[in-house]
Length: 235
Image (cartoon, rainbow, N blue to C red; front, side, top):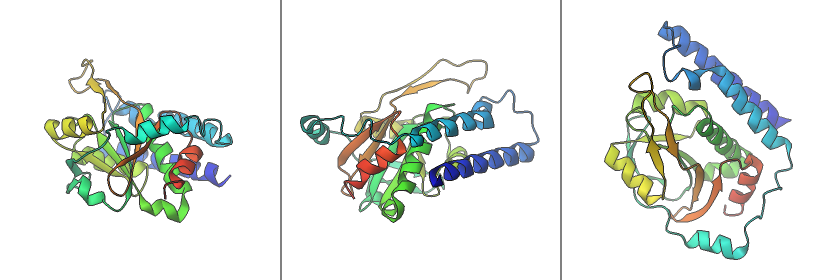
C-alpha cells in the first residue's frame, strides 16, 4: 500500500509540473515533439505499469542467472571514465561518484515510454532500500545530447528522483561514455519537425560499485522490488 501511495504521489507531482509548464508557456504544444512525453496520459500508463510490477511478489525473476553466468557478467569489461555536464551545469566525472554505488541508465528525455518507465523503476528501487539507498547514486546519461541540453535535463530529471543526476555533453563525450558502458544507440530519421526523431538504445540499468567497477545489470521489465533486493546484496 505504501508503494502504491508513493507511485500515485509521483504521478500527481508529474501531472502538476506538466500543468504548470503548460500554463507558463502559454503555447499550444500539440506540435511540439516533446508533447508526447509531457502528456499526463503517458505518465498514467507508466505509473500503472509500475503498480502492476509492485503487486507481484518480486521473486519470479530473482536468481534466474546461475553462478557461472553471474561471474561472467562481473568479469565483463563494462564501465570506465567519463567527463560530462550535469543538469545543473556542473562538470562532473566518474571520479566524483567514487565511494557511492551508481545506478546508471542511458536514454533520452524525448523517449515516450521505455525511458520514463525505467527511470521510475530505478528511482522506486532506490527508495525501497530505505536509508541504505543513500549509498546509491542514480544517474541518467543521455544518448541524444543535441536535444537533451542542460536546460532540458534540468526540467526533466526532477520528475523522477530528487537525487537523480542527468548528464549530457558533447557528441564526443557521449560517444566515449557509451563505448565505456557498451551501450548501443542509433538516432532515427527526422519526422515532421527537424528535432522530432526516435532513438534506439540499450535498455539496461547498470549497477557500479564504489570503486567504479561493474557489479550487475537489470534489463527493461525488471521489478523495483527485485532490483532493490539485488542491490541490497552488495550494500
